[in-house]
Each structure stands twice: as C-alpha cells, then as structure tokens.
Length: 184
Image (cartoon, helix red, strand yellow):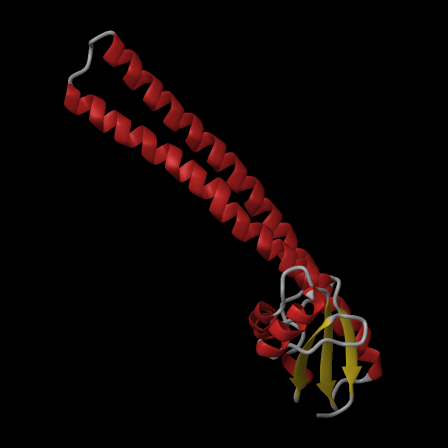
C-alpha cells in the first residue's frame, strides 16, 4: 500500500526513478566550457550556473531519497568525467561545511537570545516584586523579553529545520551517482 502511494506521488510529480530506487536528475550539457568554475583553487568546483541548476532541480526530489545524476553530453571527454564528478562533490562539500557553520551560529544565537530574554523578564519581575518600576516600563521590558524569547524559538525551531534540510540536500548531491551518457 505504502509503495503504491509513493509511486502515485512520484508519477504526479513527474519524478523518474532508476532500477536501484534512486531519483533521476537529468542535465544536458551542450558546452562544457562553463561547467567548472574558472575561480577554483586546487580542487575543481562547478560553476555557479551549474550549481543553480542543480539546486533548483533537486527541489523535486524527496529529502530522504538518493540520486542518480544523468549528464547527457557529446562534448565531455572520458578524461574529464572524473574531474566533473569531483567538481560536483567538492562544491557541495563546501556548501555542506558552510551550512554546518550556519547551523552552529544558529544554535549559539538562539541560546544567546533566549538567555537575554530570560534575563530581561527576570529583571522585570524583580523590579515588579520590589515595586521599583512603573507599569509602562514593566510592559516595555516584558515585550522586549518576549521578543528575544520568540526570536530564539524561531531561530532554533524553524531556521534550524531549514538548515538541516539544506544539509540533507547537499548530502544527496555529494553522494549522487553520476552517469555520463552520450547525446540527448
């Protein structure tokens, strides 16, 4: 039953699956002069145009699925195939490292904001208890405190979820099976 439902969804979304259960992403390369970025260092990386295409096309693939990347071309030589595979893996490995740094920053920022909000609300409550603050200032402190707490929750729950999804997408392309096929 579940497999039948998955098949219907894949048909509805027009997703192709190979015989190993991998989702197929197809890309036609008419001119490979811009496949590798001219600004790469020791290791090749794909150009921003190729990365943009891959980032857009992978949105159709479920986040838990593995990928087969079919590159159709008559201009890629056998010697360059391994270089192009490495360029894709290197680009998305760099992307994954950056996303992990963003995830760490997100966690630090969320806990910091929560702490600031907690301290502001605690100070407000102490001043109210000691009767050292008027109602307007206590309301202002309460609003500021809750804004910090809400922003912490937003960062930790929602932004963190987005970053994890993007890390998963980078992993999908790092681990993609790349096949070079003549023509199309």
